[in-house]
Length: 114
Length: 110
Image 1 (cartoon, rainbow over the protein chains, first blue to last red):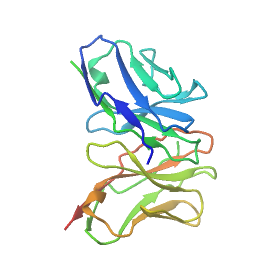
Image 2 (image 1 turned 90 degrees about the horizontal axis):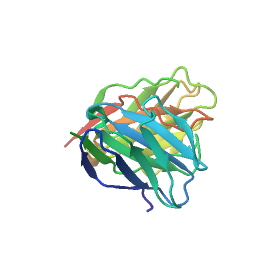
Image 3 (image 1 turned 120 degrees about the vertical axis):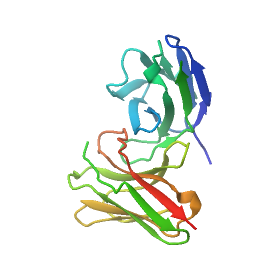
């Protein structure tokens, strides 16, 4: 069964450093998403991406964040200058369509900022 | 986003059916009702979704009230592997993001 994969599974970085989280969505999906979950809190939407552009973003997704689909398979989330409060699980998801379609999530990347 | 209300927690015995309720009295006509679950230390997992009619799949059944103001996720025979947080989410017709609440934590015991 196709699945969303994410690398790395755990990333430790120092405050102020740039990180890139990588995702390989399901191959025939068209919509891509990033969510994050701070330990003990809700899963929060960050950004959705369709047709090579951001279709929606949350207030969390400020100028420090960017997304890219550099080739036909990868989908990346970059945080330019990490802060302590960026420590969280980051989940990538993909779906074949919009509202009436389910999203499939990856296993997540645990980002720890020290 | 329209709001959903779920009990904080529920318990079930293994092999018994589980009915997880969700109230969504402000649902609009184009909102789909989605259910996801999150097992410990894992990413959210799609369970089922529907618009107006009841739905069945290999994981669960979704019963939607006639006025669509509530729905129930039915696990026909709970197993220990079904212990998770279950989220009921309304997904608007023209938007695609999922807005997670706090969900219902389901405990399954032997």
